[in-house]
Amino acid sequence: MSANSEGCVCDYCSFITGVLIPEMVYDRYFCETGSREFVELDSVDAKHFERNNSRVNVVHRVTAHVKFSGVTNTFHLIVKQPRQLDDSLLPFSQSFLNEEIFYSKMTHDYGTDNIPKCYLSDLGRYGRPVIVLEDLAARGYMQAVDDKLDEDHLKLCIKVLATFHGKGLKLREYNFPIFREFYAKLYEPTDWLHFRTSPNADKVRIFESTLKNSALKDEANISEIIRKMEDVTTKLELNDFWTICHGNFTRSNLLFRYENGRPCDVKVIDWSTMRYCSPSIDFGHIFLQNLPGNENLSEIKQFSENMLRIYLEAIKDKYQEVNYKSLEREIISKLPFAYGMIENHMLGETKRMLHALDLLGSFD
Ligand SMILES: [Zn+2]
Image (cartoon, rainbow, N blue to C red; front, top):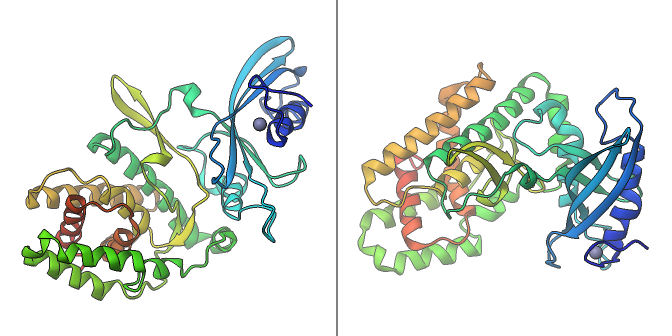
């Protein structure tokens, strides 16, 4: 058994250093396509990235030194393996499959901009499921420092999100069999959203009652907004705008690169939560959680309309035939569902979110 520099000889580490990386080098995964150089592994080191046992995946940071005709090149990698489950009928968590499909299949149609480079995404070639990605940190990518994304960060993210949704909607329109194959392989049932956001969902109900009984109840308009929201969030119907969503398009899954202190590029990670649903869910997640901390209603309105316009125009860039007005209505009318899914509501934030929905016309 080979030990890594931390001395760990666990099954996951041994697989990476003893099997995975040596075989990937042999199979020329680190070579340019068509290259004929002599390639051999010089050394490999694997470190546990997250030791949290509850996580469904075991993630490693790996450094592989590979010799190309005698010249060493270093590869900084992230290796994801599903945690092996002993007490389940399934060998591992199904969410791993979402991400495996994303990197091995969907990128052919969706492209590879704004995601980490993938060296391998496979369920069995080396004896077990594994995904090998570039380690973006080695190229200077990092999470945003502040809890909330400022307008520069947010605009960048919204454009990237719209590009992903726009490509999906276009694929749905022009090559439905391919599109269907992608979403049909996602593991969550399509009615998950209704389940999580209907007024019967405990978390939402408990929260809303707290809100009603809090100091905010003096604000008649907020109670009225909540009542209107309960009216519109009873049913989420499938329609032609449903597409494949990231499912957790939030700050923790966005890695930025900076130039002169400003974000100039963003990469989206963790595709395990992909869902087939209204694109409003992804948009709502990133938009509502990053509203400016400001109580001025006309500013909230202007900000909200601006972000929505940036999103819709970026979709139109990718999919020009899209019915802009219908899509706009779809996004606005489904935002209450996105709101219902956002956890860790804080009172001030909630008030702003509800106002933003109301000002955009989500309850009209
Ligand atoms: Zn280990």
